[in-house]
Image (tube, rainbow, N blue to C red; front, side, top):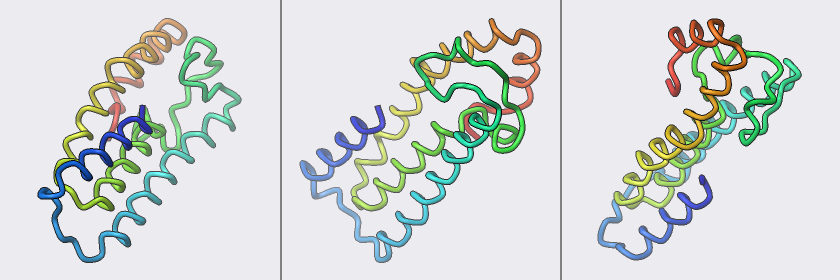
Length: 141
């Protein structure tokens, strides 16, 4: 989904160059945002690995433990947040206003078709423990 979004952003930037906005330093800023996104996503993967649970987003029902510490005390979805930041970095790099319009679509799609099913599976597996965690920690930030 992130790659498809990134490709759409690139196509939009190339198709409508009139929406380009000069942004000196865009390469540096986009690199910093991408690095932050990569770090946040990596922290999520490391937390899952340390807990011995699956990082496979297609099999949330195989989760063996509910991770609520580290980066997961700040966001329930650091891997998706990291991808969103990398996409934001891509938009900054492309310097085209239209590319930013793809970001809410990514958030909506991931929420509806990935996060909601994952959360249903986690609620089924971990019951009140997940419900309490979800009430305390936001999905994104």
